[in-house]
Length: 309
Image (cartoon, rainbow, N blue to C red; front, top):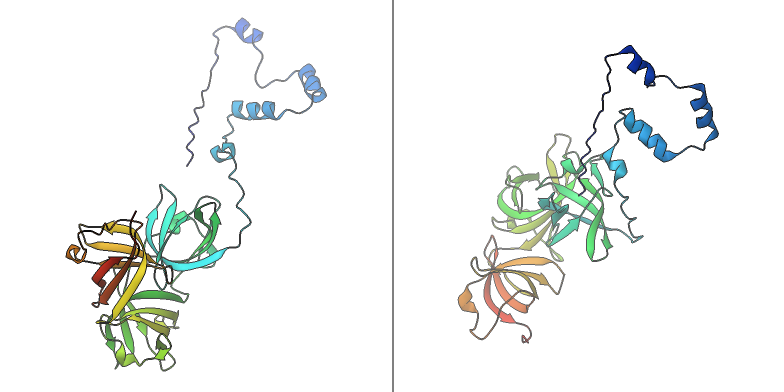
């Protein structure tokens, strides 16, 4: 981020005598000789800028900043998710990707922001907002060419945990993984409910079930669930194999990037599960056998997938 401070200093000249005023040229009077000489000389941009400053014309500081480099001609990949964290100092957002996983994405003045179908600005970016991001790889950095903030008038996706299903009303209450407020969607006979390749009934959406929902708006403003994908049911066992990206021994929390689907998962564990001779650390490759308890994955065993050197 560039910051530029301009100080304009005005110089006033005054005289108490008529003779002194007569000896000093008036700033508002230009002699014919001066006009002729100026017409004979080629135009100078420096002189023009200097005259503009002397005349008190404000200068846009942004015009003095060096131009940002052109983005590489890479094919953009569309990422959809929810803003988990917004860092305006580092110009970076962390997106919880729909269906699982997190991604850090950089932005700068080259990034175009859209609020619905209208042009927006970085002030429209907030934690908890659902966004779609056109990303490219700029060196080793994932960069946002465009960020589209979803509005309430558009359809969307969500991922979270079922809190209650009211079959008499056809209403599903979902606790979004990031939003403090629950999401309420309506189910219809056309709503597709699946777990993998198996079809399920709405009655199987018990509290604690982790789901991903695609929904669209009704004329009355409420959301209709078009498709519900069941990701985990309380009591189910899951095995994750991947690389440790974050490790918090105090909280007993491992974050791994799965080698199977390249998504990020948080696994809670008890340190007693680790044999004394195993050095669990970030960047280690591990296999964790877990049980989904209705709110999180809890490790039943953790082992290193390959020996440390």
